[in-house]
Length: 151
Image (tube, rainbow, N blue to C red):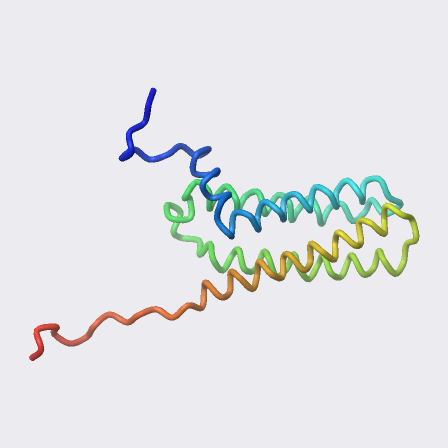
């Protein structure tokens, strides 16, 4: 069945289109680096830190699906911009803290790799929070309060 130009895309088509945007790329890289950190922590002597990577990966997937499928426009009782900002800032802080703990306290090679990838993830999540905050704080134009006919 062919689609005409006027019909809306399916969720897969919207996801591919969203993946070409700056926010889509950031979320996709966040998901990929969380998977990499999960593998490294799972193979290291510090498997207790895998829960952070799992939680942040799940949150990133949820926000990717919400933004890609346009659900943020349909579910309006949640402010998705601020929710995404809070997710990103908490992820950045937790990744930075746990990565420093692992890098200082443990000396196995895979754990060090997980710590380094965790620092990179912390920086990426902080950048995501910054980009989100900048878009949230863009000035809005006020609606005119006077009649526009010049009277």
